[in-house]
Amino acid sequence: MQHATPSPAERPLRADARRNRRRLLDAAIALILELGGEPSRDAVAERAGVGIGTLYRHFPDRHSLLRAVALDVIDRTVERGEAALAESTSGGEALRRYLHDAVDSGLGVVNVVHALLDRTDWPDRRAAAQHVLDRLIDRARRDGAIDHDVTATDIALAAIRFCRPLAIGLDPAEERAIAHRQLAAYLDGLPVRLG
Image (cartoon, rainbow, N blue to C red; front, side, top):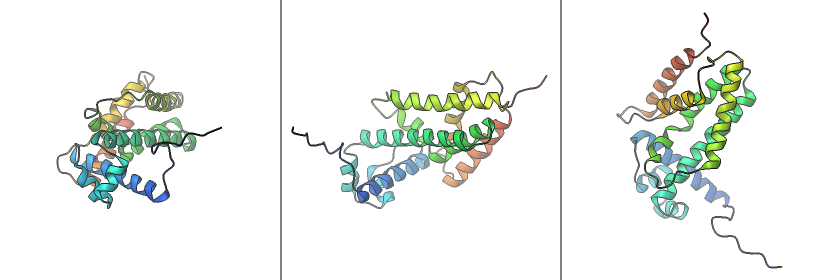
């Protein structure tokens, strides 16, 4: 029986190629958050410390780069949500950790690149993100960390607002610190109201 040769996209990447891909994604995420828009591919390659040819080998066009960035951030946010659920001692702590991790993992990038992509139908990613968020909300409700009228949509839209880059020239670390402070104040207002 003859086996088909896997396409380049299906072949596992060598360790150095994986490192370069990770550096390119991290550089693109950082630049998108700093600019509040799409960076040039030259800027991404320079920030990643690789040649432009390396960028094109991994991402032959702007859509492939932006799509990979969005999916990477969604996947990392889902992973961090799973970790928050597994490692937190309460529902409130898990939800708080998840939302702060969303800021740190660059979830705001998805908002920026969404409008730049031709296709954003990622049903498997949407389902995974929704599943994590539903479990976080259910656990936080059971523990009394949020009011019963707070929905997953409320939390998802709040995350989008806190994660979206301002693109007004603030130092990225300062902007992230402000987002964390504002998010903490928002979360403090979510517990079940008594009376």
